[in-house]
Length: 119
Image (tube, rainbow, N blue to C red; front, side, top):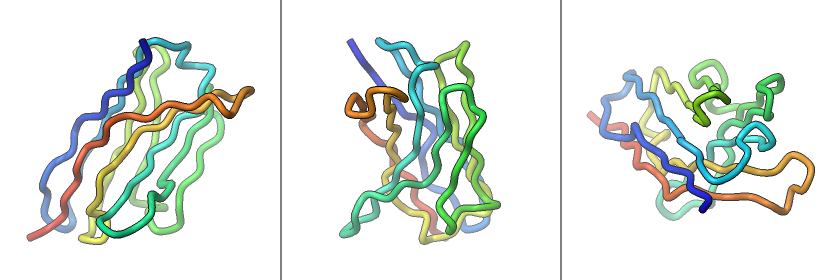
């Protein structure tokens, strides 16, 4: 059974940091590109950061470049998102996504974790 389980969300003040984790099971983790998406209330889901299966290629949306860092540990079937210098506009539900690097129609979603940046 495929599972993606996010954790690490919470309430943080502006300028603070959080580290999100996404633990995968039920599929061959290293064969999947992994991504973090977020969705704020009333807005469409947005790609935040992505990393290829071996970790050699990383991309970020412009609004988080230099503040967020995506990484993965294939031995632990886990992906991370280190979020620094958080801003109120980063408030959203953050979702983990796995997409097969060859058969791109095969993709999975986690249930999401809430991140709230507020004083």
